[in-house]
Image 1 (cartoon, one colour):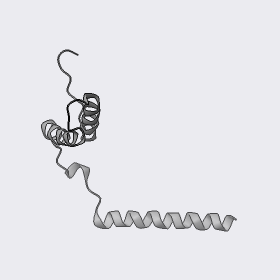
Image 2: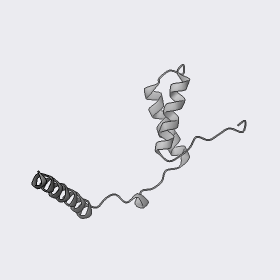
Image 3: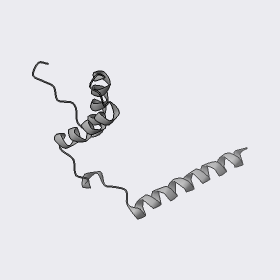
Length: 84
């Protein structure tokens, strides 16, 4: 039983090292090298996605939730109006 467990551990280590080697050889995408988009660019992209998902303006809650989640995905929070 212990031999099986040790064999599984060895296999997992080999797979993990192989994947790490592939990332080193081909290079993982560098997060700092990617250009950060502006709020307006992210808003434009998210608006297009929301318009495709919710074509009518009747489902305002779904549109707002989807739009907020999309903006959060790009690293932005929704801008608050002066009322709040």
